[in-house]
Length: 218
Ligand code: DX5
Ligand code: ZN
Image 1 (cartoon, helix red, strand yellow):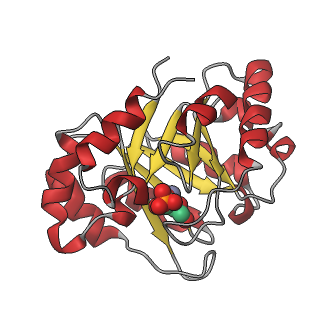
Image 2 (cartoon, rainbow, N blue to C red):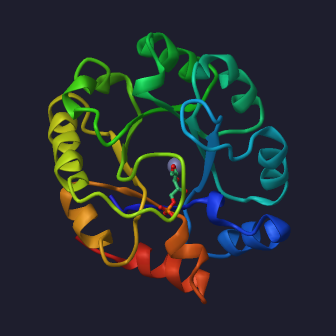
């Protein structure tokens, strides 16, 4: 399978949101990654429904919603109604993860679980067959433009191994510090969805930065 690129809206220029969404529309981006932070699960507050509405108004690509919030069950329906294609919840935020995943699917969205850098991949063993995607956090969630954590390659390879046994269709997304210098190695480890915020939006030619990530090969 060809890998997917999901530029992260967190790094966009909100004063020129329409321009940046149209840039993604006109690029090789496959999805648009939408980071929701609540100031509780992570030490930062990003954005929520009003910004999602504004993005949806112009976006021609699926919205990949990453919920970095406590008790995400409260908001699943609202994100589905706002047009989320995929909803990712954090393993660390969901005491009844199986129920949460079923709820996302019943709402008609793809269901995904993110794990923080310290969370062992093995904890996903009994849920992985129910998932459309696993998101491996390669930074501690909460902020864009952080340094990539090297141990993430090992974790991606572990998810890949688990998926071969329990869910061969599983997508493996990596989020945090992804750029053209580590893309090929991430794909080689088993990632097939690359999220990129800073490395795309701080680039002088954003469309070209997306193309480069899309052309990276393992
Ligand atoms: C971090 C977010 C990421 C962030 C990635 O908490 O989940 O999606 O936008 O940004 P970069 O690519 O700049 O590390
Ligand atoms: Zn994210």
